Image (cartoon, rainbow, N blue to C red; front, side):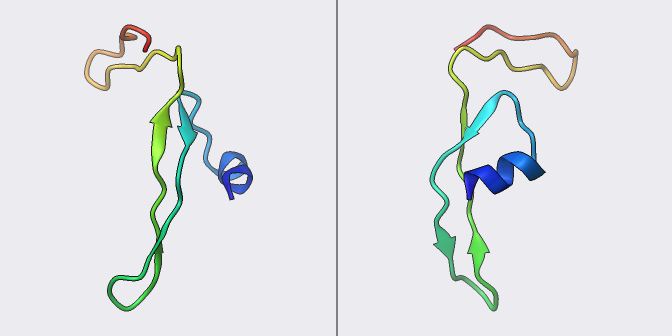
Length: 54
């Protein structure tokens, strides 16, 4: 599943983690946990500057 997501949704600063299936409500939902990629630097949505790496 992570390979399909990487081809469809590209998030350079994150890696995909666990993907449990939640069956709440009328339809099942895939919950995708994303983790910050080690050494990546996030970009501030307000000013556009890069933050410190993790």
